[in-house]
Image (cartoon, rainbow, N blue to C red; front, side, top):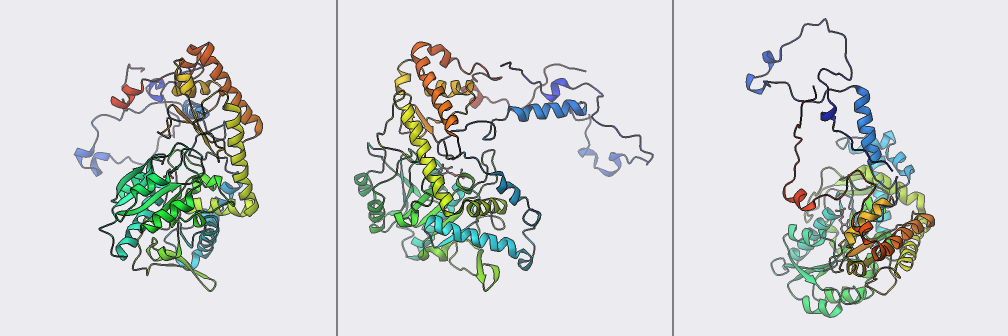
Length: 491
Ligand SMILES: *Cc1c(COP(=O)(O)O)cnc(C)c1O
């Protein structure tokens, strides 16, 4: 593969070159100086690149071809559920009736949109086993924060707001969990996982008390392991007067199989951009709806969508509500995709998602476990964690393995997370990949493991086929250069 370095537009600029020119206008020019205050006028023209239209087009098309995405290759990032999102859901989100409505339009003229949101809420109630849903939060992390504000409102309503200051978070949790707890004004207490990679019931018992506001948990957890003691865990927290928050980022593993509601959780979020067909990455728009049990509905974000006969309305007469957490009603386009996905998959299709996701993860795990350390012995759910410890002893780190995978055309799995596994490689194949793709990925990782023994420099020097090789990550983080500096004059 030949590798080319693309010049910046600034570097190929030629003085006076234009992409497009119009004939001289016969209309008299207005001098800017006569309409703008003099201190706002430039003394010299801005240094913009001067190029032909073809140069500009080829530059950007070339850059877009360098993008790696789920459309171009296998993307096994753990904890992210980078699954393929059927294009039909994109088409439906672009229907003009959905795409061209305005959030300030009168309720009466947006009945279809409100009906869709109401029906999506009903579907998500079934998926989560919760009694009420709010579609407002724009991401999982924002759902966590909103959910914890509901914890707070609940404890305050019970006169225990001052006393219940602590949120318990297992050490395997995603970083957003403790961060959201802090933003919501709580103190975080870390719960150590036991040797199986699960929440230790004894460690939990030792940590709960009258100061516990609640526990945040992902199930299956970020190691891809189901918390088999979840019913007992819920009882311990509830008996101490705390609430349970379900981080639903891993819902791909349990759709139609189990619900956080029946596991004993009080508040949940889902990531529609992970599990329900909105592409994610690149910052955005996402959606992190939250669901609550009946006794918490009064605290839900406002406004809420209510059905009155055949009429859908937004209500904001909820005096105990935590208030609005997002402008307007959340990211509506994401709601349309999720609705379309759920309706086109049906209940059985959603169950199949989980079965295939779990099957794919266990298949890869079985193929790779002779070559990499598997820190936890049990079957996994939708993702699993390997350790690169065996390779580290040969001088090959997990980061090297990740870079070498790029030469095979694969994106790297999540690395060095969760923090409780040394040299972690966290792999989530998702349900939408073909067996041939899984096999090619396994073959690549197996070959890398063999090279680590026989030809470690091949791995530690990777990537060999990419335009950009190893970066000086420390300097990039400590002394980033984020402004273009002109090296020479091309004119
Ligand atoms: C992605 C993720 C989150 C955060 O969700 P965002 O939508 O990215 O804010 C929380 N927990 C887990 C386990 C996740 O994978």
